[in-house]
Amino acid sequence: MIARLNMGGPALHVSYLTKGLENRGYHTTLVAGKLARGEDSMSYVADELGVEVVPLVAMHRDVSPVYDPVAVTRLVCEIRRVRPHILHTHTAKAGAVGRAAALLAGDARPPVIVHTYHGHVLRGYFDPVRTQFFRETERALARHTNRLIAVGPQVRDDLVELGVAPAEKFSVIRLGIDLESRVLTADRRAEFRHLFGIPEDRFVVGWIGRMTAIKRVPDILAAFKALRDRGVEATLCLVGDGPDRDAVEQLASDLGIVRDILFVGYQRDVAPYYAFFDAFLLPSANEGTPVVAIEALASERPVVATRVGGVPDVVDDGEDGFLVEVGDIPALADRLEQLARDPELRARMGKAGRERVVPRYRVERLVDDVDTLYRELLTEQGLPAPSA
Image 1: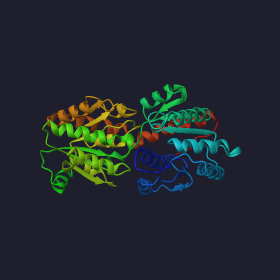
Image 2: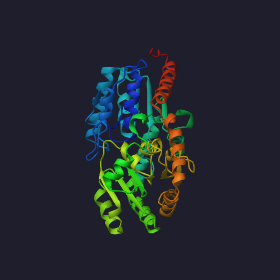
Image 3: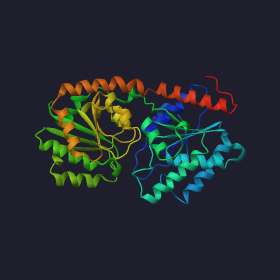
Image 4: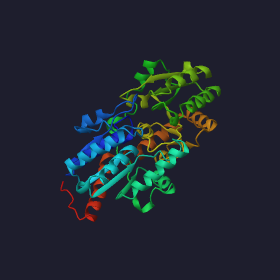
């Protein structure tokens, strides 16, 4: 169960996992809620894999005293229909709705309940009152969960520090992504340079994402302006839309750099853009496991990112990219300038990144890890494991 199949790592993760588990002898039902207004869907990945999605349209991203009880009630009905041995929830909203429904399902309550944190919203997203409410909710739900999964050690350590649950209740299972089909190396670089009229020797900084406050897109503009002010011939390519796009475009105009920026909007196929970039910039205030950084590294592009959430587990500082503190614009500009002026460094870091992330984030590894965990938890409950 996942809150919604919007653009990002969690949607890829559950789609690949559902398909992979079917091949291991599990009969799996994937339930997903409704996209928020303005969000782009990634349900096409599940469709391409032949994974059927059961819609739970009453489950919205935001807390709702109207829709949330309806979502819980309808999920109770689904649990009673399917009677699963395992309920595995992904992302905060699905974790809350799913585990509440499990507690209310009576004799159909799944004997094994697992929740995966693809990051969290317990720090930096909301005001103090709501943040404390969500923390207490997560602590209460954790007591009724057999195992908690974090997508990286930093995410686990953060949740332990916040008092969600003790470390021994967590397992770390990284994302699984079909990188071979989602990224390219240099195949279409020349084509995209020609398409946008960018000279081969001009440095291109790339970003892919949703333009919201947590992504700190204004920091990208500020760092890029500093880079241009240092005399570096560069272009910034922003791939994606979001509620802050108008404000971002206005800021680019105010800073006098709009002529050096490509606003290409939402793109379903982002693979060619990684080949177009020379470096990838990710200055977010918070991240779980950033798929865009993984894909950039798999495309042999060094990453300059902030040291938050699961980012340090993805970017090896000094080896395949650089990490800086949130809001440190001069440091972002310094690292970009270093990469812009040293093509050999870019090539070396890019190669190191691909060699590290492709095997680490394989779908087969994800399915192996989850299959092993499921079998362990089923055995603890005295239940048989499936035969492949």
